[in-house]
Each structure stands twice: as C-alpha cells, then as structure tokens.
Length: 158
Image (cartoon, rainbow, N blue to C red; front, side):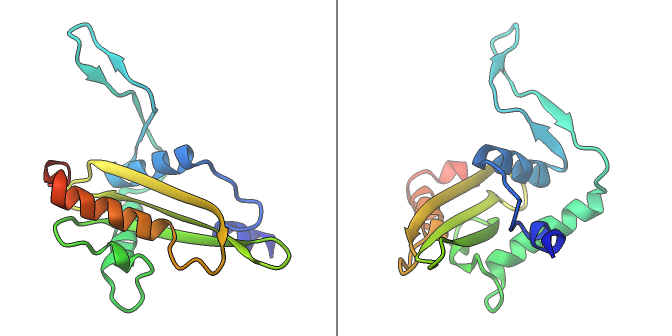
C-alpha cells in the first residue's frame, strides 16, 4: 500500500519547492536539469549550468507534458482549468493534502510551465496550512499572477 501512495506523491514522498520547479523545468525543456545559480562568462553574458537527465525517453516526457496541458484545457476533468487564461498557454499539475487528525487544514500547490508551445518559465506556488474551508488555493494565486502578466507584462508570456 505504501508504494501506491508514494507513487502518487503521498505518504513518504517529500520534495522542496525548488526541487519541484527544477523537475518541472526539465519536463518543459526536454530533459535539461537546470542548476539554480547564475554565473557570468568572460564576456559578461549569463550562463545557466545544465545537466541532461538520462534514462527517460523523450516520448515519455511528451506524454507528461501533454497530460499537464490537458489538466488546464480539459473543461470536464482538468483540475487546473482555472489557469486557462486567455493570452497564455499553460501546462500544470495541482495538488492538495489534508493535514492533522481532524483534517481542518490543507496544503495546496500548483506547478507548471508556460508558454506550452515554447516553454520559457516554470513555476511552483505552495500554500501551507490553510483552513480547509478556504475556497482559494495556490491555483487561484497563479491565475491572478497570469492575469496580471497578460495585462501588464505580455512580453513575458509570448
């Protein structure tokens, strides 16, 4: 039973937001795991060190990317459909976890990338220990961010 729960991100599965955004960006860019630090080369240009993820077939990564896009655009089954913001194509995966014996608190997160067709940005938003009756979670925070970007900084989403 624990193997099943771990495979869907429950039980003993633990990951930091930084580890998750690195994994999502590797899915988005075809398997290059970007190390989060910035250096300059001899000409003063920014350099982002990368290492290639081995052992995952490109077609399998594409299936995951397509599933993340369907999470946003599928009007019936998409758990991320609130991110179907006109003007930007997003791929995402959401998650929640009830906390405590009485399940009165919840952790909410959303991760993803955009634009789907030519990914430039990966994101993770985590909201911890919210009241379980709070109707707004991390997905709604990301929707607000995307709406702001479409209206005020469209150069980042094209």
